[in-house]
Image 1 (tube, rainbow, N blue to C red):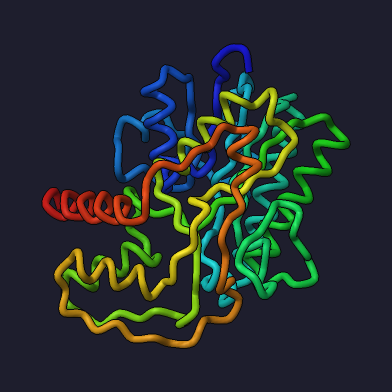
Image 2 (tube, rainbow, N blue to C red; image 1 turned 90 degrees about the vertical axis):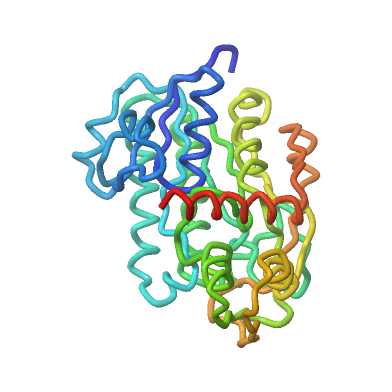
Length: 309
């Protein structure tokens, strides 16, 4: 884009949304958020957030019509939670449709969508390029919702001329996360020296520090005109065993927690390493935070958060 676009961020009160929102404002962008929840991390961001539900079309009417780019982050994102409650996957599909229909009717031509590495399924090898998606191997309702969201986006692009960038994210961690996801849960329990569980002895994943994720989103905005209508893997490009990561956290926290291994849970991808060559080439995406450095930053942030609580 030649000039800085006016940006709508859905899911702006979440982990990635909050970090992206504050980054955009610091760079002089005009941005507005949309979320069901208040932003508990930053009141300044909350004042720029429209509170509403993407499942309710009437709530989308609260959004100003003069938007140049939508960054669609909002989703029910816990894989196993959607195995237990598949209706949450249906919500992901409906919110994507409502966002695309809003864009179509308001003639908003540009969308960046946060996809997921879950679309690659368990195919017997870890490394995955963008074209290696087989819908017949779909592992979970969450993965199905992300695949269907991409399909809707591609269809709206062909039928209505909406330009897009899909960023398939992988295990983003760092600040602004107080959920029961792996990192906040491990840190909380290890600080209390409680037993922790790793689901899958051979589980190997590609972890992405939050600032590298946001850097990819920023590059998507800056490079939109030359990178549009493409799908990219965004991660570190390196795989680490979950049991190893748990051990690194335990060592850094000087915890007496016992790390127990349990079988991998239904619906989860057990091995994934992103091939990020395409993102390096077209987006000039270069992840810079190592796992070790990212863990140190994450632990530091949670310690600071605990002191303020």
